[in-house]
Length: 125
Image (cartoon, rainbow, N blue to C red; front, side, top):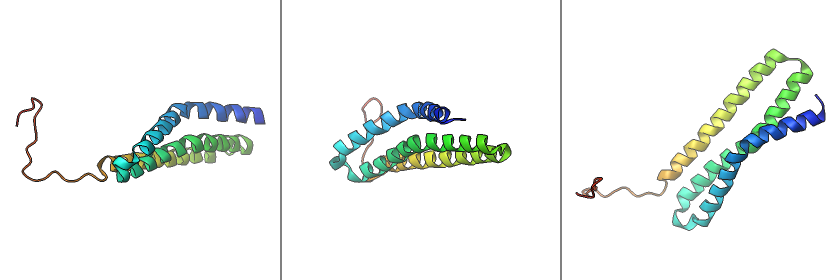
């Protein structure tokens, strides 16, 4: 595998991440623009989208490097195990990003006062 093949592989793996990276960028702009409304929630949301964006940048490079190592070393069995481990690592990081976003949903909210009536779908109490 020559350098051009590695660059093409990296570019194709990175291209798959572009939709996620665009959403992360837009989300970060919105979060920063509305920071003062809910700073605690904004911090958690920024961390969540930041982790997601980090995965989008680092995962293609790591996969390309690992695939290159597998091809050059000839250690196919070890490479398969390494790919599975790397996949698990990305899964854990993705779960962390979702957890941070979940925390952002509830961060800084005050509890509903006891005895407050909740309106139904028809708007009646």
